[in-house]
Image (cartoon, rainbow over the protein chains, first blue to last red):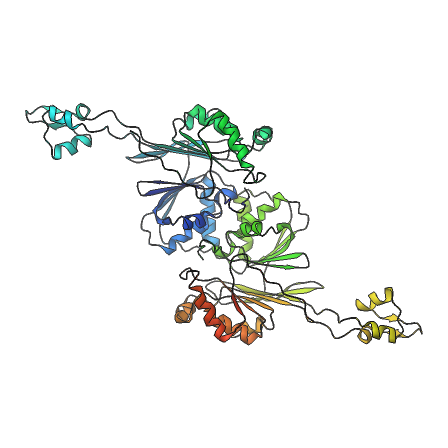
Length: 295
Length: 295
């Protein structure tokens, strides 16, 4: 909740197939976007966890960046109902020049956004005020195309292969129907990114984060402050690791550290988490991770 | 209006006798305060020029920093009427925890703040919306105490010397009245800091900035874009230099550069200004200047 030199406020960006998703937007987010040379106009959706200043005051500046670029696509913003008031009052009071459409939708628990390729789920966290976690889940991709099987089923190379790959049945040389499952391998899992902050620990977090490739989760305190964490409705890094372990996550990215820890002292948080979940990293400003496609 | 790596948004801090005055508060201001290791609680007054996001969106985060420190003194905030709405709606929508008093006063032209030691003046600029400039002017200090004259007037070393220094008359050994002007040299001028952004050029700016030790002034464009500057209600660096020259300023600190200029290209802005007013510097993030006492 307090920026430090080299530790801006909370935000995470997911880039997927040319599309960008922003989770929270603390003060300084637009500076990091610039430093990374990322094109702001490719952000299609912004998801805000809750209405505390350290998660949202970077938003007005970011929205205004748009006036610097051509943006024709609308920008979708998701979060608590009050976020809509915040955007409206910022636009009004600051006379913000915004030359594209902003579509705000208040969140509800469940799937809030669904396309052919992915779903964004929203779930309730337990903080001092209404706070949401999010997961971005890719749908399963079709299985690997088997040239051998296609030829064995007498489907010659050509447009019919593309139809099969995209899930349609075709007729083979003998006039028989060949279905995709006869040619394609098993469906391949999509990837999953889960974003959790701010919240106290509760076991169901692992259900929301189930099978995440990356769990981006707060780990604000070390274990000696577990009582404090619970009282302030925050988590220790060890609790974050328990969530990652119980969720079967691929990787835990710790974030949202208390300013009480110097950069050096943060190692303690990582060490405590790794005892429970070895694949833990301390995220730092502008660090990036690649999640490869599965299979 | 757009932050760049190494170029945060607009803010200037004046430190005087342990007291701090902040002029504008763009996004990232609290980060620089931290980097400079300056104690936020010593800021007694914040002056906002106008309600554009790049000058004010760092404010909510800064106000919340307070909850991290003991602050007993109220914080005074000055600016356009609408700034009051902004503070109120930010506090309400973001549930900001603020454990000290904030006293907002809408600005008017003239002396808005006066103490025994200094005056803060406010004046209207000419921008696309209501915008104020400010000057912080120290009052004259009493002249230098002359030990020779005191002894010549038969005032012995002791508490009477302090009374004379502080402006009171005393009785000498012979029961005669000795007044401060008999003992002290001529009054010494105070220092003056003037803050001007955002505005188009107009000649009266030099009157407001008259005799400033530091004129902290926007110089957004080079001279080839003078037309653009006027249209957008901004100034070229050469126009800022004209103000500094006509004001008889000690030093011109350029600020608020267009993002069209790379760090290297900013030298052009400085060069054009120096042709008119040699004592010109390009300010950069966290640069500081000392204004020595006069005489």
